[in-house]
Amino acid sequence: MTNDAPPPLLTEDDLRHITGWAVLTAERALPVFEAAVPGDDRPREAIAAARAFAEGGPRTAHLRKTAWGAQAAARAVDDPAAKAAARAAIAAAGAPYTHPIETPHQINHILGPAAYAVQALSFGADDEAGTMETELRWVIASASEEIRRIVAKMPGRKPSKGAFHALLYRLDTALRL
Image (cartoon, rainbow, N blue to C red; front, top):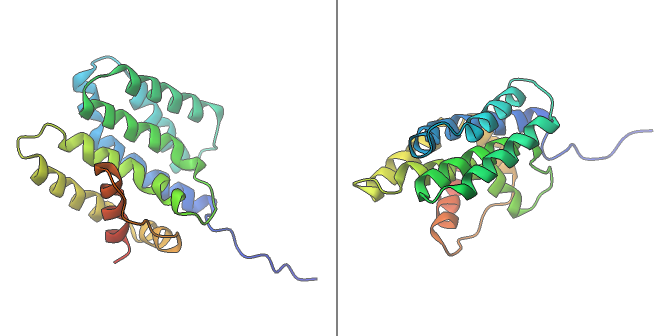
């Protein structure tokens, strides 16, 4: 008897690649949060827990707990750049839980940490649009071939309203080239 079931859309190795890229991008934005809220380690802890998974560790309750901690940190800060940096950390800690189902929504979980990092590093910059373009180029260049392969097998985003959704769309289309 043969097993005719298709392979899973996302493997555990795929989730580790997704999480590794999420950590890389979220770490870039972390100083924005830490400058606004010195001494609040919750986003840093979420990124560290995500890194442990990316490097071969298990998905644990600690990973979820640190994501919730970063969520609380994001809610507690008023600065939009710091809030976006904390959200990048939340999304990094949530990346190991990306569902292996073929829906357009799942691409948001893959691209979210990078998009939040771009926002965090752009908000309030002297040349906000120029900084956003620079950071967008950086996150695209930092995406490995594995990330590009994973993005390519997911349904693409449709253009939608709002600055954050426009950023997700730009990332999605750029990583499919």
